[in-house]
Amino acid sequence: MRGGTVLSRKVLRRSAIAAASLAGFVAMAAATLWQLDRAFPPPLPAALTVSTEVEDRDGQLLRAFATPDGYWRLATRLNQVDRQFVDMLVTYEDKRFWDHRGVDVLALARAAGQFVINGRIVSGGSTLSMQLARLSEPRDSRSFGSKLKQLLRALQIERRLSKREILERYLTLAPYGGNLEGVRAASLAYFG
Image 1 (cartoon, helix red, strand yellow):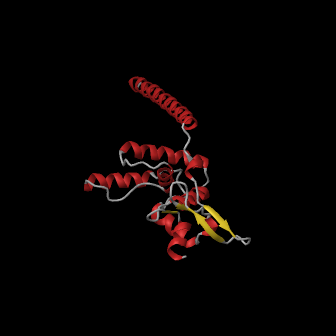
Image 2 (cartoon, helix red, strand yellow):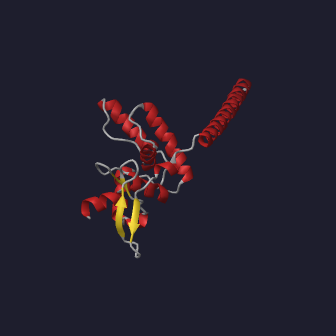
Image 3 (cartoon, helix red, strand yellow):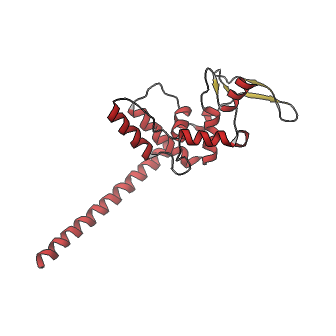
């Protein structure tokens, strides 16, 4: 029985060392990410340049002007958008939006599995927060590195904005064809 006691002490000691090492690694990783987050904040204010709007005294839009970069982008508040549209958007684009902290690990795993099985991208794993990160910092590249940066930016965005603010920014920046960005600008252009 003595051999079993020595063995269990070794296992216990190794487990304690492994747990302490893991805790140290997690603490160092968290500190590093926190420093990087402070050193490289997401470009949230600059990304929300919107069209100049002229309204009448009752707040009705009379005229809008394109942004300096040539886009029609009107600020969108959540209460301006039909609730069914918002529910449909969240269901289609990111059904676990209200539950995750910027990254949906299950969706990424599903998309990676489909890529491995089919040899091509079948479906995406991006959350609305990741899409907002991409829209805030457009890139031509669809590389693994740009996807990783998008993932990290999504985590930063989730730390800085509420879910409501994330949805509002997404609804303001999402492309709707040509130089139309945002659901409000698209609605006015397509439906008047």
